[in-house]
Amino acid sequence: MVSPSSTSVVPPSSVIVLGAGMIGTCTALHLQQRGCQVTLIDRREPGRETSYGNAGLIQRESVEPYPFPRQWRKLWQVLWQSGADVHYHLKALPSLIGPLWGYYRHSGPALYPQVVQAYSRLIAHCVTEHQALMQGVDTQNLVSPTGYLDGFRTPAAWAAAVKDAQRLTEAFGIRHQVLDSAGMAQAEPALHARLAGGLLWQDPWAVSDPGALVRRYAEAFAQRGGTLAEADIQQLHAKGAGWQVETSQGQFEASAVVLALGPWAARWTQTLGYRMPLFVKRGYHQHYAAGGRLNRPLLDAESGYVLAPMQRGMRLTTGAEFAPVDAAPTPVQVTKAERLARQWLDLRDPLDDPPWLGARPCTADMLPVMGPAPRHPGLWFNFGHAHQGFTLGPVAGRLLAELITGETPFIDPTPYCASRF
Image (cartoon, rainbow, N blue to C red; front, side, top):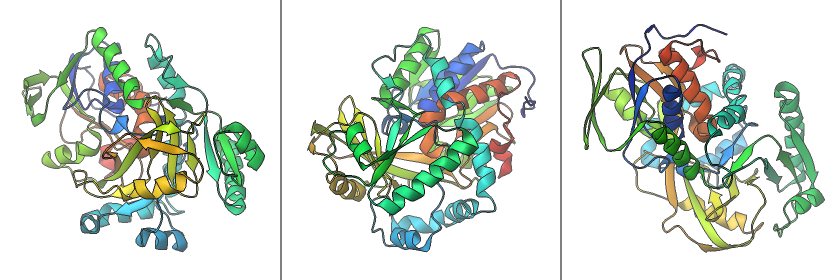
């Protein structure tokens, strides 16, 4: 165990958490468990923004964050946007050059192993920390320990993935099962294509309505005395020894404030004078009410989309779109991914018109920002979890709550401190 990185030794009596996605909601729950009076504020009801639209996976196997591609063939494909996994807005590129260069640099052999070590320490606790928060919360019809599948179109890609999976098992203890073409057909009878092979990752849990799980965590928080407020945040500033948040529904004051605003965190950190290499990867999803249904989520590993069975139907989620968080939707990836997915599975009666759009909050070094604001006592950061905010919510919530209340943190917080920038 390590000592807290915070300079505060007196736990705050009251805390405002800004952002009611998975990260913010879990932070509020953990602070509440430690005796703080907590107010959780978001412009929408909990779980309706980024946390709503993902593939619904608690990804215990995801010990390595998604690196920037470095193979020339893949970079060429990204440049010409010829695949279904990456799209970008040309006008957005000038503002993204700095963060993307940092992302590329941290994805190289000199720095990426260090990133993986810090990232994997968080992922190692994701299932057990979700389990702890689920105590006393009705999740029976939402969560299932089914694992998820990687499917492969070509034997060469499958063979390379099998070798890499064995490496991950040896290094991190991640459980997996290798499935040949017949094994994939047996695991997912609804598939009408013969895949080259697949990998069943056995440790992840699947969630059939990600937004509903966040809402149930938030309902538990409210039932235990927490305050939920649906309001637009207008101003944030220190007041005396504490903080004041001005919103469309009035003013809120507390001893401390947590910024857990996901892709919108950059606006407030910049307002407060912080310059961090933050950017977003936008993503889309579409539901299909009829057609084939899988037993568990399935990643088309060579094409970069996921098919996940949800309560609303089969959900198709796309890869990454590099664009400003509030730019107009350009769901070209949905069209490309849908065409590829229909080679594998019958998909009929799309439900989302237009397709849902959300944004993943990312940092150049692929590590989240968790800990005290370097120049503002009582202000705390908890954002930048990229593709794994849904997975890491309880881990991030616990770590930050321990730092805020002066406990010895269960994970060394040093790699995630804002001061690294």
